[in-house]
Length: 225
Length: 244
Image 1 (cartoon, helix red, strand yellow):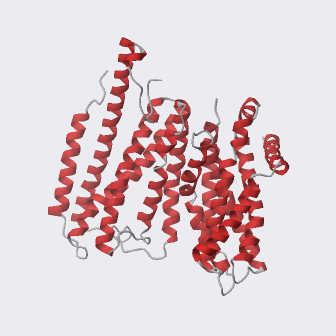
Image 2: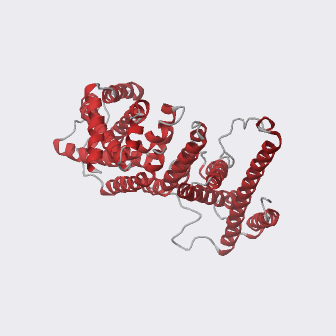
Image 3: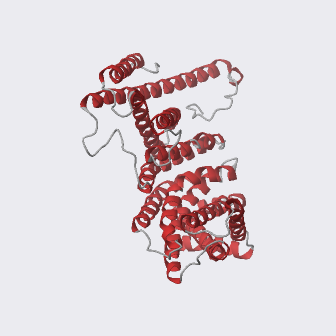
């Protein structure tokens, strides 16, 4: 399975590298959302809970763009049929797509986090807090990637593709929102970055684990015939 | 072929249990010291919420069966289970809102985790019908709906955990699980109401399935007699069909 995952993942990344489409759109959308937050909240800077909320919402909504495009190229150009014809486990497609979405989200955050720190966050993020934020975002991204892959695979076969993605994904991702917002709040406190609350990391980890298993069990039924 | 066997007996039993439950709630259970008469809504709201949540999970279990066997009747069962739980869900949100208004003075309170979790679960399941509608191929529609039902079923407990943890302060509850909770007379009335609500759900579930099976059978017979022209278009429906 490793070889198949590798091939599929490299295909997705190479497509994005040759004709960048999804990641730039996500990044521009994310920065734009920060600007929207500046005007909508009427704040020059945010801290604490508000900062965690802004980061969380921006990440989530930008991720929706990536999720709704995740399977579109494969569906339209016959990539899904090719995977079904090839003698490989269909789980390979799930793993490759989830990893691709994870990579896209990581790339998005490379743009989003500095933009967020420069544009809105005050006081700026301490160097030590950055490592903790990276760990936290990795846990959240894993959850978004797994659930996003599942929802993307469902939505690509529906008539109103892009309509269903946020409808299905937002409620499913609410535990991630709760965990991310709660856990990120201490990092953005005006008094200086605090420790990550272990409880919320555990909730995010549990979420990733459970939905990883659910996706593993169910993905085969989404790519049949 | 007779559909809905023993449905009459079940319906009668339900009517009796629900009536008894409400009679007990109003005349036997003592008046709540804090909330007075308004607390009686507890006997409708909480059983309805428990039954609705169980209905969602039950729909997920039926969906597992559907994916394992591939038989359309399991899809029908899952569909009806979720459909009815959604209807109960509207009732839960309405009664919950009324209760919140009466006891806390506001129509909606964010610091009541159970109510908030229920809203999230309700919003998620509200997408079940749009999802079915937007997939035309019947086979795929059934399969995808089942995948959705299972994912959402797994989501229900996880969501309750996350929302529950997120509340720093929880309102004192009528149904305190740790300290023995309800006085015995209230508990009895509550239990009867819970059983009544569960029976009501089961009755409606079996009734709708019987009704759907009958109409499928009728269509099949009509088609046999008069050809395809005798049966009209199914119209706008995303309900599972037993006949292809």
